[in-house]
Image (cartoon, rainbow, N blue to C red; front, side):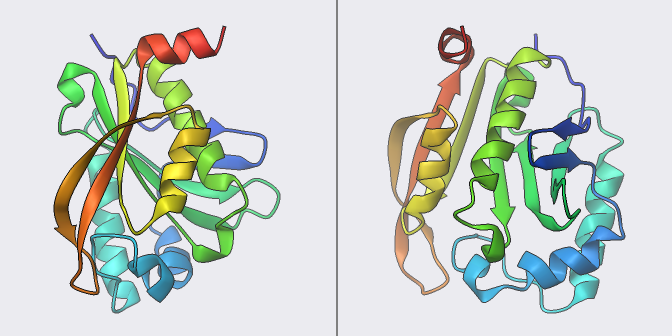
Length: 189
């Protein structure tokens, strides 16, 4: 049975993953929630104003009261700049299956931060929370996200054909990656 330990602070060589605070909303709005580049690859609409981000963050902060909430803001250790968020959907979490989603500022792309954060969350979910499976999906128009998943040890699982419509009104396949508990522990021994 999976342990629900919540969003404890996680640290890597370059990152701090911590609970979101309301003061983070303005920075998040400016860095990724209102970005045209980021908007291209996410299913939610970019935020039209900082108040939208504040309302979202208030909701997310309240959700920390649920022990099944796993959501972090990602901060650079050296500068304390905020670069994105990473979280776990609790759709199948009662079965020990954790679907991870993430979103990063375009200024932080191609620097290995997304992979570093994903590896930290995968490690936490398997080693401390005793998850059975970690999976993630991305729209086919965002192959860089698939590279992040591969570098984090996840394997291609399948294609959900014509599953979503992107911001240009084009149908996209969702590509699925996952890693099982056994695969994780066998690769880390």
